[in-house]
Image 1 (spheres, chains in turn yellow, green):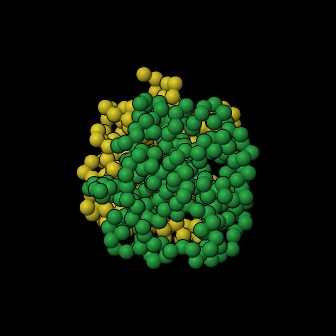
Image 2 (image 1 turned 90 degrees about the vertical axis):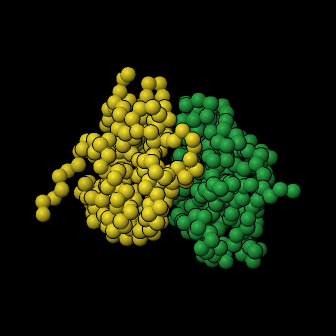
Image 3 (image 1 turned 180 degrees about the vertical axis):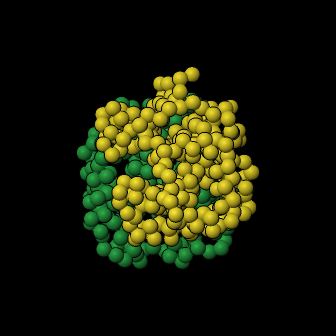
Length: 218
Length: 224
């Protein structure tokens, strides 16, 4: 089977969201670079894959998909019998709820934080403290809910690691590399959940492949 | 008469609550709407936080299952009662439904909601409309609607030639949007306009539209 093609910048957390699931499934894939800094995502070649001009896009044979969460649900469904089972055989209301919680409570705050604290410096800028403070404050409230939930549940949907947990991994990874890592690490159940995800062999493979610059020396 | 097994908690004037109601109406499921008062802060009370720790509406109780997040509720209801609206007959159809549901959630709705909040809800919330916010989001929405136009030129509905939750999900927010002066953005695009009119003509959509009277928002005194 030809490797799947994942289009995007390897460091983009939305691209890494898909890479996370591809690795959990043990699937062969290659990242085809789409350089946002040169506007490649707005060129006709890429718009033919995603008319909204955003990364990632995934090509699997004749299938062309975009929107990382839709891509992940597709992979988890099509390759259900490969690697980790990310979607239960019986549909789970709790799983559907926490997939949406990631999308509408966690991501809207984690994304601007990671952009300000990780990506602006990477491209020679500096974080906007107003944006950082606003989203750190909001994410703290969200993660308080996660803390209470994870005190009762090993994973977001219950006893098993699922797509709901996997969809958080890329932003958790980046967040814990920033000065706002305390949002995760100061909450014992959230921290334990993150460490469990980080220890998964498939996720270690995903993280190791990221072309991150070395941390600044002390 | 038996009490419906399904309860929805919230205020139906909310496009999020009404999204859940639309799914129930399309699925032909009996439900009880348990009214809550936003002004009285019902969503912050312990009994509601026990249902939804994020303190939002809607919440759906279906027997012993409780869900929140309107799109999760819609998926649950439709999977149980009308799975064809999730495209479950094939992997490819389901993927197209999921893509266009994500597009609604992350591209269309944020821009449409921002415009609706400024144009319809701002005075109700006791503040002036922020025209800069409107202008910024009108530009974003225009670009998104152009992609919808191209898509609906190729297929009857968003996920293909079959109606799905990807078409239904934007209805409630678009209902408010189409009451603003920016409805012209939709009217200018023949396929989007035809798609919109088709949705609005559906009996389930008409029923749910009754819960969201736009003119009730012009006078705060009319609220509860």
